[in-house]
Image 1: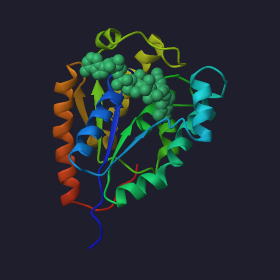
Image 2: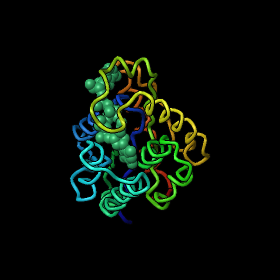
Image 3: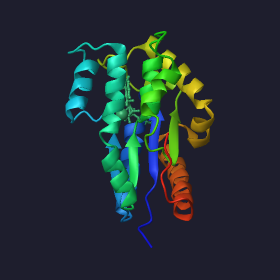
Length: 216
Ligand code: Z5A
Ligand code: MG
């Protein structure tokens, strides 16, 4: 019998919802339990494509909106082999932002040739997560967590449109089935406990179920 594959767990949500905080906590807890864990985040700013994305986000470089959208997607595709290898070797792979972010931040620009469906298409075929944990936070709570930074998308008006796009995307039957909504407006420990329970359930399902990863 081959190695039991690991689970693919994705975190999504608006800015300041606590994705990076909760990813790190989950990684630390699983590792402390002796589990094999691999932690990824998108954009991965370390690759040549990631450096182009970083220059764009920090305002140092301009890009056509379609081109930057495709670069974000390419930045995921260039990590797919590593992701699959880790999963197939039995690791739990925890991902901070994935193609949902890719879709909504681009669609929120409201460019006629870039609707949600167009934005989703370059990511079709990527490994589909076993669960997408969506950290839900109100605009009021988001505002309490410090002002937005200097990056290109960190503007109130765009963030409001991103919120709407996430809601729209959550209606897509496939996305809906994969998503678990967690109220991220609560204290860190409370949020962490709920996430731990979701992940425990998902890992159990993966252990008892279909061994191959599905695709987007
Ligand atoms: N983007 C895109 O356009 N297309 C794509 O395909 C992808 C991304 C993948 C950079 O992403 C930008 O790229 C992003 C989307 C776009 N644009 N925007 N805007 P990023 O992931 O590098 O962004 P980030 O700055 O790391 O993440 P974030 O979303 O702003 O934050 P977060 O990771 O969700 O939150 P956090 O860093 O864990 O926490 C924020 C603060 O809140 C921090 O001070 C925490 O201590 C505090 N916090 C966290 N949890 C709590 C609770 N429960 N209570 C109180 N305070 C809390
Ligand atoms: Mg983050």
